[in-house]
Image 1: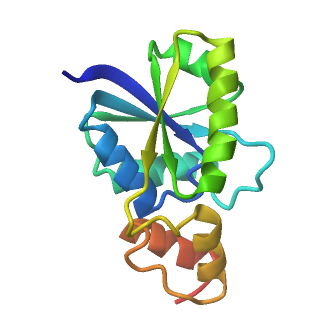
Image 2: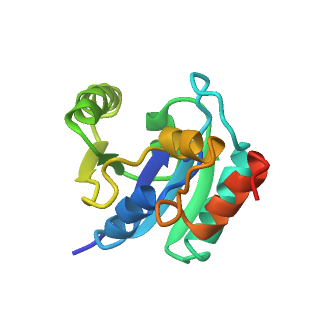
Length: 162
């Protein structure tokens, strides 16, 4: 039996095929997944929040079961606001788990009714991060097959590559 709504938060700067893998698998468990773009003050973003929202919408082909939104502040407050109970987080490596476990534990402490579902990224994408995608593109490397085509195009535009 599917649950109603889950939140998939992140900076998504930019969204990768690894993110999309987690999202599509999340849709197998939930009726609707809210991709929630976080304003992260610790990260210097390449794309504006508005650009990221647009890229995600295009990457998911405006799927009616995916709501794309943004939030500022605590994730637990956003989850309450949208009447969700579950948060989806993707894991690539053990180092991801340590950080994500700490965050999930803090969120659970702040909201006892909120649970975090960890999903392992598929083997084809475990080495991908938004940061490495940006670095590879900036130095002229190919990210074909690692990000949606629209993201690849916009990255090339950002770094003025042909």
